[in-house]
Amino acid sequence: MEDYVIEMLHITKEFPGIIANDDITLQLKRGEIHALLGENGAGKSTLMSVLFGLYTPEKGVIKKDGKEVKISNPNDATALGIGMVHQHFMLVDIFSVLDNIILGAEPSKFGFLTKADARKKVIELSEKYNLKVDPDAMVEDITVGMQQRVEILKMLYRDNDILIFDEPTAVLTPQEIDELMAIMKELAKEGKSILFITHKLNEIMEVADRCSILRKGKYIGTVDVANSSKEELSSMMVGRDVKFAVDKTEAKPGEEVLKVENVCVKSKLHKNDSVHNVSFNVRAGEIVCIAGIDGNGQTEFVGGLTGLEDISSGKITLCGEDITKKSIRYKNTHGMSHVPEDRHKHGLVLDYTVEENMILQRYFEPQFSKHGIIKKDAMREYSDRLSEAFDVRSGKGSKSITRSMSGGNQQKAIIAREMDRDHKLLIAVQPTRGLDVGAIEYIHKEIVKERDNGSAILLVSLELDEVMNLSDRILVMYEGEIVGEVDPKTTSLQELGLYMSGAKRDDRKEA
Ligand SMILES: Nc1ncnc2c1ncn2[C@@H]1O[C@H](COP(=O)(O)OP(=O)(O)OP(=O)(O)O)[C@@H](O)[C@H]1O
Ligand SMILES: [Mg+2]
Image 1 (cartoon, helix red, strand yellow):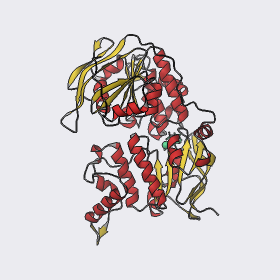
Image 2 (cartoon, rainbow, N blue to C red; image 1 turned 90 degrees about the horizontal axis):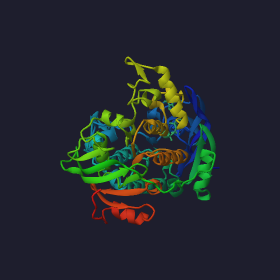
Image 3 (cartoon, helix red, strand yellow; image 1 turned 60 degrees about the vertical axis):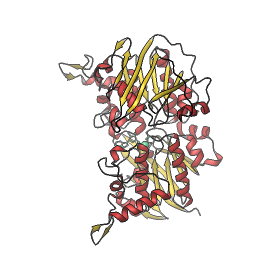
Image 4 (spheres, rainbow, N blue to C red; image 1 turned 180 degrees about the vertical axis):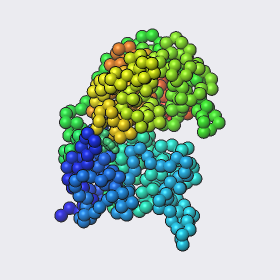
């Protein structure tokens, strides 16, 4: 008989308008890494939230070590040794790293907190598993990579041995991903059992022993990864073959749409410039990509460009007009679209519905409002049309609160809105983060279509496959500067890597 540490049998969980989990059975072997794969909205996070006690299923049972258990809340889950790193982290921003790790599991002796012991344990764990964190830093000041290490330490601190990772790699840099893969393998070797959600098939091939596939709330099957292939996994999940390469013709660049001259942006955290003297241009009909390792000034640069941050010097021209000092709303209504890096902070108002989010920057236009009153029918019609075109899935369609939607569907809603708005320039930062392979294929096709219709596209991506497949020109950013420009048709991943790591740089001509 198989040694299952967790069995979820015939689980059904419904939300208004949708059966998120429809009779799903998932069996986790002791000491295995078990991947969970499925399209955006397939029900992966829901199933894991059931196991972690955040949702109570309508039907089904959960067994731990062969015995039926009741998991009504996360405390029950913790008591059974189950821990979870959430898709959108659940840390308290204004607490320190250490306080976040011990929150709810504070050690005490005769009722007194013995924080020194807690600190010692956290430091030991962080050294043992190579999870570098600064225990005294405030969570709001640390990178997402470190936030994730905090989430992992939280599980290890509680001595959990069933570990759920909900899309942990979506927000990590390639190097951090390699580190996490190594940590997961080490944890499994020690006998911990891991459930791992990812959309990246390479990661599944690299670390997972088995993979279960869900589609539209239903269980499709479980395969041994060693006997499977990326093609098999993706067709099981999407129900058709997926093309990994992007089909596109040679770019035919037209007039200059965006011109950036000697732009500097001051870092909020440090006193120096995090972006120095950046100059380049993007023309109509081309996709220019800023590539680079995360944290090399890309976020600050895009902030300066879009108006989320102040630039300290330099000039930005959009279609011949100096927009350096213009407001965000002015830029929004004069040809700039922006798919932001952080979909929760800058992309959506999470407590608004899909339709309200769809007209966020244009509710005042005559087609959507009259005498300050929103035209509800027009808003609904517009939102329905966009959701249909971009396959935005949710329980109640345009009326769904965006907070309740799956991560990938939130992302698709933002892309739909930004692509549909009247624009000359589309700034797309990590546009396919968190999307399933089918959705990525679709979005890449749409971006190419935009280009061919004469938009200028500035892509900012950490995903090397995306950078190489989609771009017409690649600029590499390193320590706040553009250190080189390469042609994706003639460069190699090795050459790109040299620029990205700062080992190679060109004398740049002025744009
Ligand atoms: N709290 C909720 N209220 C209403 N509907 C919800 C809620 N949570 C999830 N859903 C719906 O259930 C479905 C499954 O969502 P879930 O988050 O499990 O998908 P997922 O497989 O994790 O997708 P992704 O890859 O995009 O993260 C979605 O259609 C979502 O809109
Ligand atoms: Mg999810």
